[in-house]
Length: 354
Ligand code: NAD
Ligand code: TYD
Image (spheres, rainbow, N blue to C red):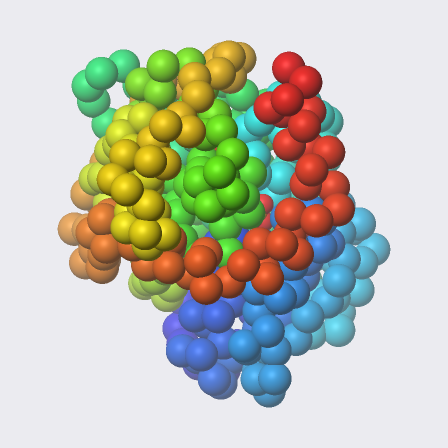
């Protein structure tokens, strides 16, 4: 997609990754109008964007992507040239508790956006783009060796990953059937600032700080491939502007870690920050019942993105974790705000009463 004046709809911009994508686009492309459509679920928070709220090229619209009339109304109002679709239910553990919420938002919501995009672009698809943000979890689970490439067959195993896989298939179906210009990326696990403390890294940081047990599922042997969230946003920017229509790109930093090793590393970073004796926080580690159907290992091969578009991650993991811990320690008001309300109910259901 060219970088001439554009009106871009970003969905899920009040969430973790979405807020970083909105910030990058608003700052880097002052001649674009960025409209953020977000339902502000428990995971969406306008505080994530308060620094860019006064910018003249940024607007927020509250709404649900499953609400066809609302999505259509926004297309009429703004005549978008592009869509970057991040809105989703995103947490595997919640998908096990309430799978239909994931089908509704991730499958039906994506279909509504595709339908409106086609209706408004069908007479002139020139320089239009529907960019769908997806996950490596659609590929399923790896054994000890091998990587997910763009050719790896889909094999999702949780309600979350199955709903994201369905949404990916819908995006490609709209491309093949209706010629809608689309792109899709599948990224590994993200970490960084503004990450909701239900996911591994922010949950552990918050629990270490508050001297609470650190719940490691199973034996902590599962492996995830971690990417700093600002690097994910920069990859989306690269692909959105220079990727090939109809293509999918894997995004990752070749950075695999066992869960237990990450928890130990976080404990030692936090001990230093909090002035605790070395090893003090690690005493909080508690092995708990495993997640049902827990995928063993994810590992992304991002060679296509590196070779075709020259994208590379900017940060080493230790450096990114250090920045992340510092952000959480300096933004305790944010943590208090997002963990008030329903967070405690979810926490008790997930960790105390099971
Ligand atoms: P998040 O849960 O932090 O944020 C999701 C956002 O979507 C929230 O602001 C929420 O209010 C909004 N939303 C939810 N349902 C909505 C609806 N029906 N209508 C409108 N808005 C709605 O998620 P995230 O971690 O920032 O993930 C963003 C996207 O990136 C998702 O599509 C996810 O599948 C994908 N992804 C995430 C990761 C990761 O590690 N977090 C990795 C790869 C891909
Ligand atoms: P998570 O951050 O939920 O991301 P995903 O399941 O999408 O990869 O979990 C990352 C890994 O950490 C995963 O293997 C599950 C594990 N985990 C724990 O051991 N304890 C926890 O409390 C959480 C939330 C996750």
